Image 1 (cartoon, rainbow, N blue to C red):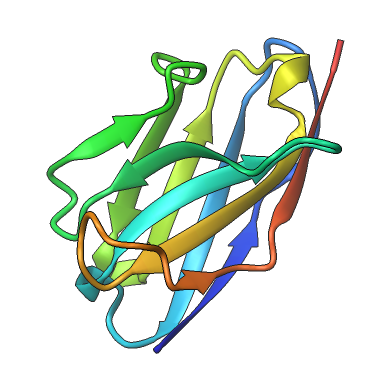
Image 2: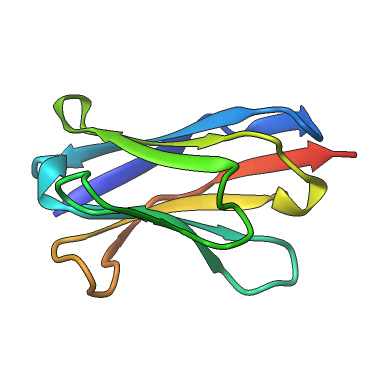
Length: 119
């Protein structure tokens, strides 16, 4: 089992940047594929980005492609989400999630971190 803790959220102006971190404890993080999701008020949770266990393959939602970058440092048991050119519509609670096998459901979730982008 793995425990996930997100950090790095905050308030930023449109066009600014933030880097979110997802720190894991428990089993070695390299055993897990990791995804970032977000949920805005009154909306469904949506996929943002994912990285495979090896770190060699990433995927992104169309809405963030070219602006967000997911990466991982397995030695630090941490996955990052670098968010650039932020827009007000990126405002949401961001969650990281982990899964043991790629292309399966995410079984482990963090508590979330708030990102607010002002116009």
